[in-house]
Picture 1 (cartoon, rainbow, N blue to C red):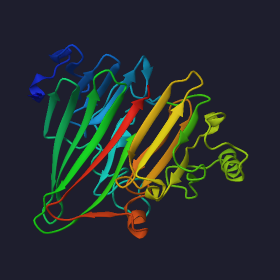
Picture 2: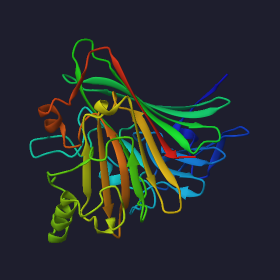
Picture 3: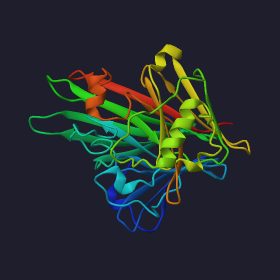
Length: 339
């Protein structure tokens, strides 16, 4: 038996409020001084914090006393139309009509229209073994596309792993909609960390294109050459403090390696960040690493339907999904701390 609790924006205030509590779970809400609503799901191992009305951004995650989120410049979430205005989060939903870093030929914003979408509904479901937060967003434009998106986060009892899901439904009566999606998880940088997966060792390839937001330096160019020559271990964060601008890798055609993909980032102390998903849903994996005084991130895997190089690039390489009228597609990622 489960209990469903519908949220109302009028419930949120600067004073934190517990809205549900069991022996294992606590659900609480509050509102930041910036006006952004927060929803916290907590179990005996830790918590996740969501922004239920802003793209259901997963603002923070902490388990077993370990902060999963990247080092960033934001002390609290800000009102935003684009994700760069709120790039202090643990994860966000990139896409959905278009996504990734736009090329000079693209017209969409960075990571698409959805990441900071103003969600119309939010609710929580609690069962004996899990608590799940849902949000709902309806996108509609005259002479354009019409879809419903329902992102969710599920936290299980006694676990430091959680599930990030997205269901997209094309509400059009006749026309297909383009679909690009990436579960963009901004994991903390782990000095001396080691990355591994159940893919072949050479599955990840260094990005050779340079997007507009990357400004190469001589040191960065030399670092790329060292990675390509094998002088730098691409599966290690040893020395990755030099990764500024960002270093990015891609692994394509993941279904060739099996139905399920698993990725880990392990610290020298033995803490292992973990992510798993089905390759049929996410045929492309991106690895994004950046280290400077303002931002430190080791996104050891970003599952995606295509490389995050914009709409036109996905279309050109045949990786753009077309979702038929009246049909839905569901994406699911399991992530967190292993063990």
